[in-house]
Image (cartoon, rainbow over all chains, first blue to last red; front, side, top):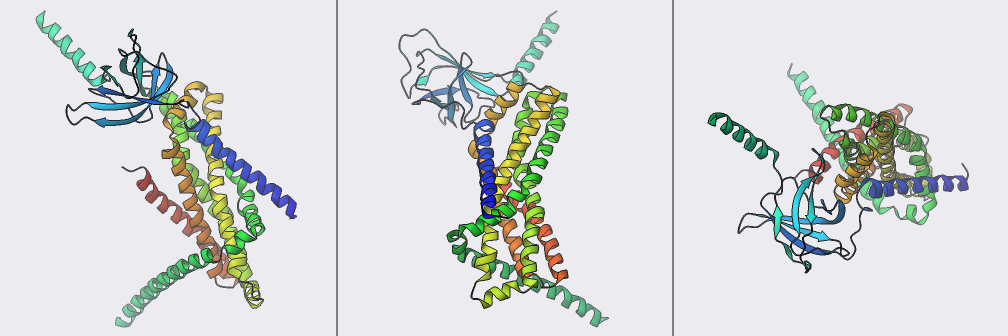
Length: 155
Length: 263
């Protein structure tokens, strides 16, 4: 085979391979996803974080406004400490409520922020005071069962 | 009786010693190839020819089988997931299984049987027809001129082929799952993007394919260079390349998986 045609085919091959890699990292992975602009961090304590993982999105009104940077256990009070990496464009009032929600019945969990009415906003590094733990389905079911059992015996 | 036993033991011992000898030579050969790689970088056209030989000519089989593997994954994954009512996770299933495991492994197996065997046969035939000896006589080092470019051609082609395989597979899964069956397109992509991590999944998949590329290319050039210089010897070396590199890929895959994903 002639030199030029070998060059062309190798060139096409390399371009295809690099395109496939780009497709994998941008479209399949979350590399090209939401880029956070000049991020700042926030802290939040939860009693139970359920199935939350690092890099899980933080949403407010359904819009991704940040991602979870790290998860650790506070050795003092045995609560989960979640540090959030927030988009610098969005600031939240100091009485913002952080809840752990599930998208759909079996979907993945995320942190939802519901802004309060405070005038002052959370400074970088501040802690979100008001939090609600993840809903553990088993607890909910057992509570419901106990309630029905008690209701039945009192009749 | 005693004679037969000692003969049997001697045969086992000879096989073992031979295997260890070959392993030692293979390791020395690997170092020689690395040390003599300067020519294949300086005269990059030699390597380019081998990328064409190993990579471009494997393109059709990789793309077609990637597409079909992805289509089967889409179909089977949908059938299984729809029973528990979680068919939104189809994208995650297809993407993770391709990027982490099937892409590098199946592309590596195809690469070993398509390109690895061809490399072994080519080098073995050059040895059988005494072309390698003739080069040596002309003060051209056959390892630098013939072996190293083929090795690097294989090593450079393999990650690109594995990435193409995974990308085509995901496209095939999309084609069957979303276009044909009608799973929700939005959740197919968004759940995939939410749970496929760049470093954890994609980069580890690429590292796997690089390791497989090195292993397959090394085995292929070694078997070719080491083969008996007869027609039968070349055919046996070609078979050995496919068998050994397939086993090497599967064994290495287990080791790499437990290193990368086992906690």
